[in-house]
Length: 115
Image (cartoon, rainbow, N blue to C red; front, side, top):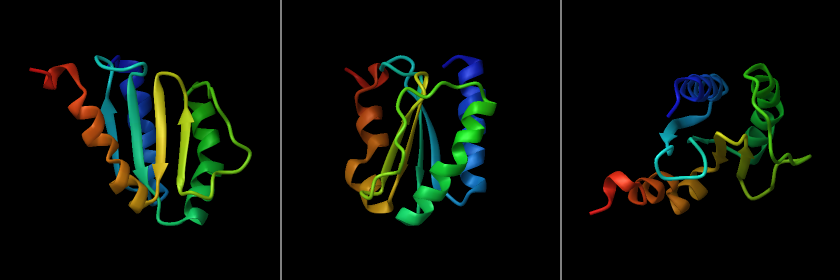
């Protein structure tokens, strides 16, 4: 992952941790994907999700990222995906994060893990 993208992803990780997201992880996908990385965090409720999504826009602008998708209101399903091109942010409820296991799915598809 490029240093500039890594720094921005880590800034987003710190922001999410400051806003009480749990188990925030930055996944380097530069060698196996259409994006450089995922930033994944767990929210505690739909209300928490809405609050974090509402506040993260200022951070995204501050970091000079462009959002390729934007929803007026975060979904009721407990998962918000914010596509910033080089960085894709996933904010997920604990149940959805466990069910979809993005970390396991993408690590398993990494070229480094192929035989």
